[in-house]
Amino acid sequence: MAAFHHRLQHFNHHHPGSDLRRLFHRLTIASSLSILCFSLVYLLTGCRETELAENFEIRSSTRDFLVSGSGWPYDRNSSVAREDAGALGSSDPGLETNSSGKEWTATRRLPQALIIGVKKGGTRALLEFLRLHPDIRALGSEPHFFDRHYARGLDWYRSMMPKALDGQIVMEKTPRYFVTVDTPARVHAMSQDVKLIVVVRDPVTRAISDYTQIISKTPDIPPFETLAFKNRTTGQIDSLWSPLWIGLYAQHMERWLAWFPRSQIHLVSGERLISDPAGELGKVQDFLGLQRIVTDKHFYFNKTKGFPCLKKPEGSSKPHCLGKTKGRTHVSIDPKVIQILRDFYRPHNQHFYQIAGQDFGWP
Image (cartoon, rainbow, N blue to C red; front, top):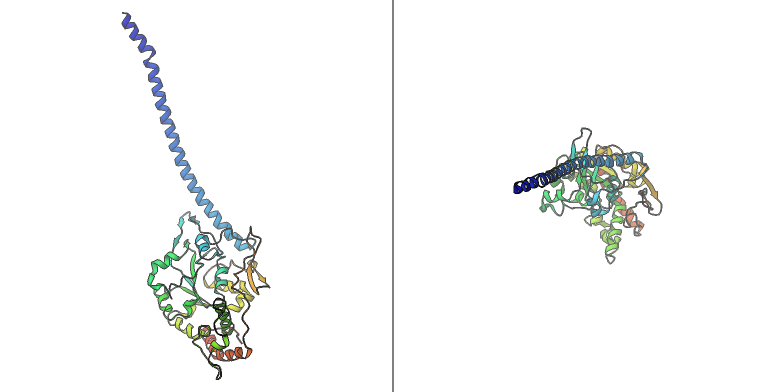
C-alpha cells in the first residue's frame, strides 16, 4: 500500500510537470521558428522592392538634373568608365523598373554607335561631353578593335563594353578607324545599322596639332617643315606622312560610303565643338535619336586653355576640363609652309564638302 501511494504521488507531482515543461519548450521553439521564417520572407521581399525603388529614383534624379542643368550627376558612368578614363556620365545600375514595373538588367552589348575619327579633331572632347547623357554608355579608352585587335573576335569586343540597360546607347571611340582601310567592312560585318560619328577639323591645323603631340613624346624627330615635304626645294608635299595623310578626308570618307549610307554618318565640326559645344552636341543627340539633355547650361569657356570645359560637379571645388594634352600650344611653323599646305588641301577640302553635303569653311 505504501509503495502504491509513493508511485501515485510520483505520478501526480513529477510526470505532469515534466510533460508540461517539454510541451511548452517545444511550442516555444516552433513559435520562434515560425516568427524567424516569416521575418526572413518579409525582409527579403521588402529589401527587393526597396532596391528596385531606389534604383528607379537614382535614374530619375540623374535625368532631372541633366534636364534642369542645375547640378551634376553624383556618379560618373560606372566603375568600368572610371577604370578606362575617369569619364563623366550616368551611373551603372544593376536593376531598374520601367513604367510597367518590368525589371531591366544591365548587360554588355556590342556598340550601336562609334566615334570613328579623326585624330586630334576633338573626339575626346565629344566623348566626354556625350557621357553626360543618361542614355549613353560609352567606353572611356580606345579599344582599337577594328584596326588592331580584330582577331580577338566580337565576344572579346563585347566584354570591353560598359554594361547598359535596354534603351541606352552603347558607344566607343577610336579615331584610327576612319583612316584604316579594312575597318569599314569589319564594322559593317558587325552591324549594318551602326551609327558613325566623325569629328573633322581644318586639316592644316589638325596636322600641326598631331605633330605637336608627336614631338612631345619624341622630341628628337626632324622639324615639321622637313617631314611635310618629299622635296622642300620643289615644294612637293609628302601626302603619305601620317599627319598630312589623315587630313585627306574625302579619300577616307569615300571608303566608308562604299559600305554605309550618308544618313548613317554624322560629321561634327571640330571648330564649332570649341566655339559652340552645346550646338554641336545638340545635333549629335538628334542624330542618335536622343532627347537634347546636354545643353549650354553644362559648359563654360576656359580662356586659359582656349577650350570649353564642363561646369564643376557637386562636391568638387574644380570644374572638369580635359587633360593637359588637350588645348595645348602648337609648335611654331613657318607661315610659308602653312600656305603651301593650305593650297595643297584646298581641292581635297572642296571634294570633301561635296561628299559631306556641307561646307566647313576651312581657309
